Image (cartoon, rainbow, N blue to C red):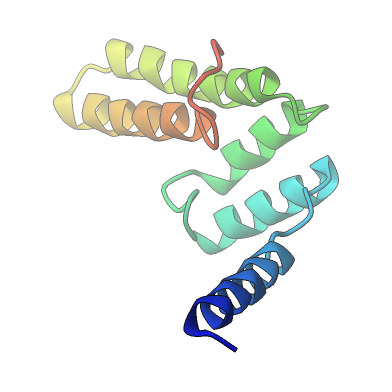
Length: 116
């Protein structure tokens, strides 16, 4: 076997191995369970989100549609943004702006091209 054919064979084996690592898409129920479990344990990517608000957003999801995803999380971000603007002290405003940012950030996960 020539070095070139050995290299080709090795690359083909690596490619097959990599393809075997790709997980099947999750169902909506599986995704909801995983996200809530991570929120409850304060684990990435929802470590900064309130578990009760995560439950609220997940409850609004009826499909895996990215626009529905963005809308559900942005609604909570909008609520925090409004609370930040109404806050009478800087500390409270800062906290709500931070939460708004975190929910807007998660609203774009895993795609950034949704108008929601």
